[in-house]
Image 1 (cartoon, one colour):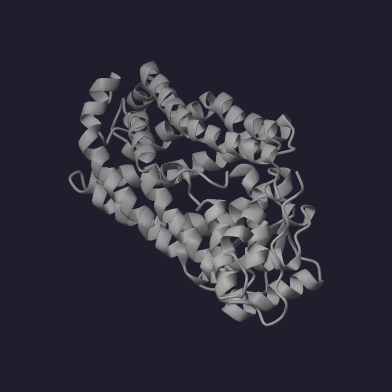
Image 2 (cartoon, helix red, strand yellow):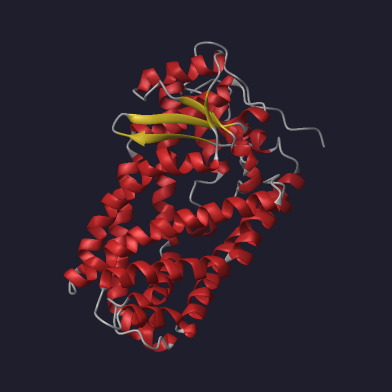
Length: 405
């Protein structure tokens, strides 16, 4: 234990580098986000209910099968029609929650036109992904009517990995420019870090994340030796020093080395399996309650909005479970960073910069239900506890002094 170093006092000093007004704004944004989660679910249910009441999907399916059953074609067309209808109906809510609200809190500088254009691109990607997933799912329902949910849960693990890899190489470049980090101390440091822990070191990238968000972030993506380290330009616009870069990038490398993608994939597959089982049991009652006329059963693609409603409700109820798993993963990545790169102050300084969109000291209940990362206060405290137990040989950075009132 470092002589005279108090982790609690150091944590308080870090948190005090933000003004009370900044903390209050962060709390308002974070707690408002909890309501956004609830209202977003209700909007999703409303949109699906509207599509159900129009009966358009049942008419589309009947028109396609007037002469002979063509289940694959029916799924193809109905899924596309539903995805487009629900996507268009959701635009006002998406504009509020993902643009206007972010803009009002200073978390994006993007004009509405730029956001809307990118949103339509995301819609197109979403339609394609939805088509793939539900074509496979309806195929399983027809092939295994009694156990489709079991095969669906197993298959989701594989499909998720494919989508993850496709996201890195095909989808993310649609929205951001990824450039090789220029030569210099920062790049040299990240390359050395990557080599130290076995992360691919030939793709150290910077991307223009500031065009979407002013949030301070980085990621280390990839699997099985295919990977890259990508840092948002926001990190450098907010004057990140090398200690912060080491702390943050070390955390992201932790996700890669500790195979959190694979672990998360298994967790998602298990949650999906349970969810599909419940959907199979709840679907007939949901059809009756929602008045989904013309839907002949769970294998009928015209019932897709009914599935969407059930998924939305179950997803909301599962939020505390998925968030608990996510917090464990993030804590493990923090631990990896500090063990391998020993930058507790660098990571603490970077974490404080994230308070603007994630309040630092929620109640235990609030954190359990809503937080997909441990609270900043808890994470900074963990860094200071580590610092106390593992003092550097060279003079260690000191915690900042709280500003004078």
